[in-house]
Length: 402
Image (cartoon, rainbow, N blue to C red; front, side, top):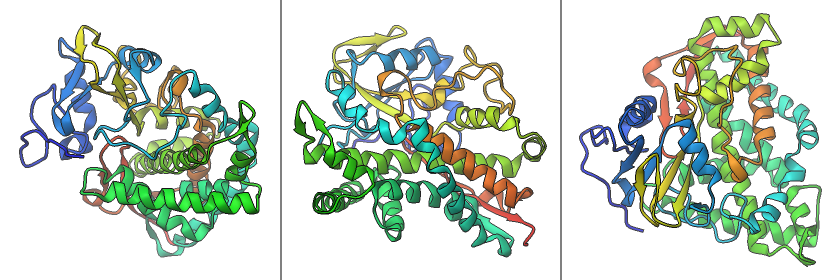
């Protein structure tokens, strides 16, 4: 695949308020400014020339309407801003009706509220173990040492793969998402992931266990076993979509708490505040922008989208729309009216939202119980990843060693 980027300045951005580059330094550092500029244009849909072009609505209504309109904006083509394909095989995010319903249904037993509750204690034990590993040091990287270690191990347990593979999974997921625009890193990582999952599938056929890959092996569609490629693709989806997104949400929330002592105080003193806080973390720091492709010449808010045009469903931008949220660029820990779309909208809304919420809540509560007071060690050392999943990659913090 050949990528064509626009002319840029030293920051990697084009300077046109209608243009954007999800990997550009300015966008990664402060995407809300770009969303606001686009939202206030006569045509509130950004048009980027980066990576062969894409279109990006940023208002709540426009994003949600497009997300629900699978007839005009399909998921069956690339959902990547780079126009890259995922592993072959149908998944819950790369199918439209009629196949979408049964493919999505494959994931639901594992992601139902009752099933997720069964993972809570194991997740809490994992969090406590991670904290014990650095608490006596009086410092840690809240992103690398903590947030990025949780979802990968939770998903690994669900898939029934060895915990020692976790670091390798982290590398693959980062190459597939964060470094997707760097050489052939993405293609190499996808190849390794697919090969690994095929080997795991072969093992489950010989010796099934109590994991989701084994569950897939025993499932049927129209009276026939699920195709191997679909099982591998769905398993890859769990890793790719369930790891980077959730660790980005956890890392962003810890970054916020490190820089907002008043919000730490609220959570420490009022247990009932957690329900509102979790939803505000999800709204304010929404990590995911999804992709679609136009099936015909169409328009959004009067802005033309050509057939085949790549559309970016900017759920983070929708969650900052002042027409939907009061004072949207302010984090309000007890925000009561909060119909955010951090998990998407329509039939492709994230099937793992219950799992992600659980991981986020437990990760933050266990941290706050063990380390109630902490702050950034060096604000300039905080780094963020770009692309379609935005979140901090390094959040060095200091606290009282115990």
